Length: 363
Figure 1 (cartoon, rainbow, N blue to C red):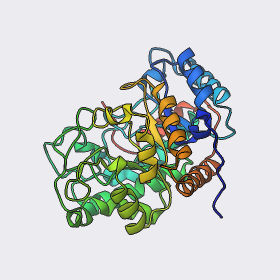
Figure 2: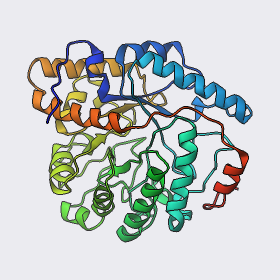
Figure 3: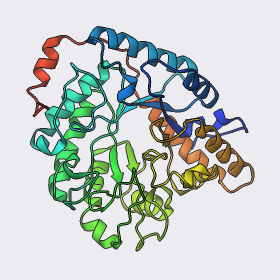
């Protein structure tokens, strides 16, 4: 049964559509406190600067526990999403002794063991969502952003390793996320810096990029992250994050995905100008994107309040259908209800020593 959603003009009525990156601090700042209290987002995302890397394990862990407790108190939701990008290699946020696994290409044949180790360690940090595995295929040697973050150079290699990683991660109690739909591995540019264009037909995507996502969906992945990429032969001029053709037509109808769709950071230069307009959030939700991620590295996270206001305005004047909101609200609510909520706890050194044997680590 679809859940009835009865919003008001208060930004908090639409706060569940947002995941907010905290300011560059290991303690909750006044900016974050005000924003989290007013918006009441579905959750937060942690970055490197949210950990005190210069302190011993016991001390940075205690500081981290206080930051999460403060965030929960401000959000005032019984259940929140505590997320992180933790892939290995260049995409690691946490200080030692958390295991510093090498880039994914180095441990693709050990993906289950690495996923399980990552999940166990992230769980001890109170994290319940890891924005991994990368389901992109390393198709272009000149790609400046994916490369060896990918688990392989062929659809078969990536779909197998990605599913094993997800099984290990979720077996340890942390939810995974397939990214970056419909595929970032063949692009020539980095969406952090500009809007990539991949001029291929949907038939090519079906043969290559979509296969790992299809496998992960069959495996039961609950989160899929969008790519800020334009596909001119599929939906001209519209980034995938805003594309109803790709999100509803391909992801949901063709691939049969019924879980939550989450955007990549909307502060990235590929879409930053678009998301400077409050109504763009309504475009994204209308296209099929449930959760909008906005992080402090590239944007003023206070912008989320204006985007929530844009959602309220679009709902009020009928540009965003009640049925669309209710379907999205139901998916997000179901996800949050199923997300475990973890206390921060210290792990014995023997656990980290054992995990370093799971796969290659950084030198």
